Length: 180
Image (cartoon, rainbow, N blue to C red; front, side, top):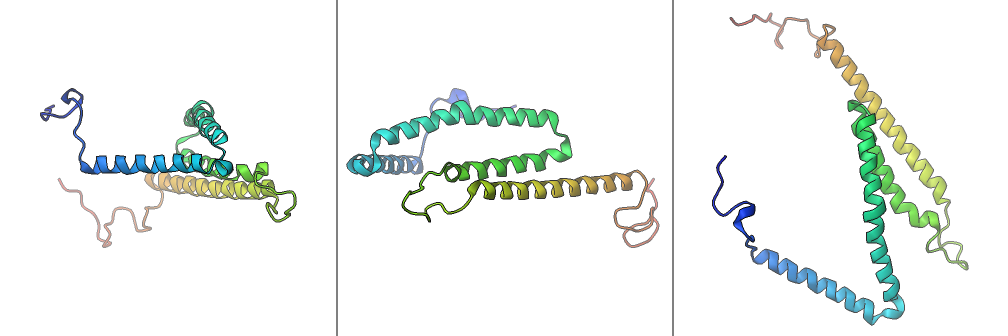
């Protein structure tokens, strides 16, 4: 293996171009503008609660959500077979995202006592219906994929050819002759 001079971990700090530095300056400017806005409008933003929310969210993600997702992935990889794994992974990804987005609605955050239209629906029932639809579509896709693989394995084992033409003929219908 050849190594290009000036690349790899032994090359030292990488050189960053003007696009990197202009993006970094713009990013930090936006962050500082947001912090200034949160401090300037402290009656509305409640900076103490905002800091607790941001730190609590980061800790909850790192200490709870990420390990649960990783453990679920390990268990899924060990228990679910090959053709079923991708549909189950997709269903879990979609279901988890739906749950996370609907969590504030399920908890009733934003409900105003004097306003009956603030959260007017039964969000738990709606989430159950949508998760049921996700499960039904996942099952249909997985069964269709399994049936397709069964028929493909039957064709490979000597059943009907994939295109429906006679065995031993080419696409033009002429007999195939092996080349010596």
